[in-house]
Length: 328
Ligand SMILES: Cc1cc2nc3c(=O)[nH]c(=O)nc-3n(C[C@H](O)[C@H](O)[C@H](O)COP(=O)(O)O)c2cc1C
Image (cartoon, rainbow, N blue to C red):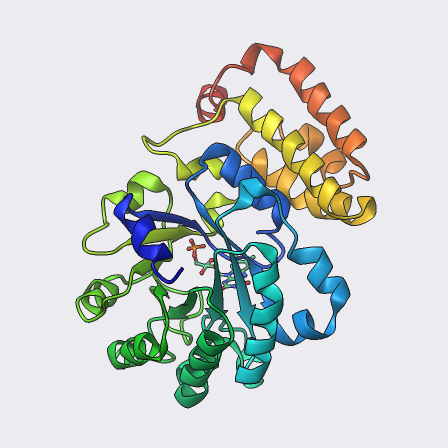
């Protein structure tokens, strides 16, 4: 089981969907996998404490479809024993491995000792990895940042994580202090890889598959977050650009998958932001925006999509990007 990674990395670089709260739920993962079945999907982050104490949350978020596998469940918290208890629950759901969030820079999260604050509470960080390894046979990975304030201690920190039993590391090319500001810096990650035996994945500002492959260097894979909004095709090579028809079909698929996974009211609230994002470069999106951000059901989503299909039938086979260029 612990060799799982090695087998995968022999196939070539790992393409990963980043964990994103309010995004990478079952429906989102399904749409990404429908485009590229080789992508490794991370869930949104879940509190280890909630997974242990809330049967409702556990039953909502851990069941998934076969198409989403291999699935990586990301958890956060600060108490090593709680991680161990959560691992026992997660391993019942055909999960590929468990990822620990040592990434989150949000003040509330950091102040309470979770997320990226584990980069400075290193004893707790290593204990978490050790306890997880004792509790489960599933591989354990960590998603982290260059460092809390600067990058000078990344190498020893990562080596300790490896020694504590981490099977893979994803490093975001910014510090906690930077949060999302500035550009992601990858030089320290290339350097880090020279000091580790485990796979190292790069995260931050990767636009698409080709963009990353060009910068692969000595790393083992990449993880895309925000650039997958409206664009699961970013996981395809050769700068794949979808046609209007493909985008409309994907919107419908996304909406149906969400409703299957969540109750209707919640699904229709959540799909709104995705619908607008899918069509963000469609020149005539304004005409539909109001309807898109107020949909109440899959049926309503379906109706809008059919309306766009009908009104712009001449453009269905054309790439959204070309439609935009032609209209400007
Ligand atoms: C809406 C949103 C939610 C996020 N939630 C999480 C999360 O739950 N866990 C995590 O490790 N990172 C989370 N992130 C960070 C992403 O995983 C990723 O590290 C970050 O967006 C940088 O990658 P990108 O430049 O490819 O977007 C989130 C990012 C966004 C935009």
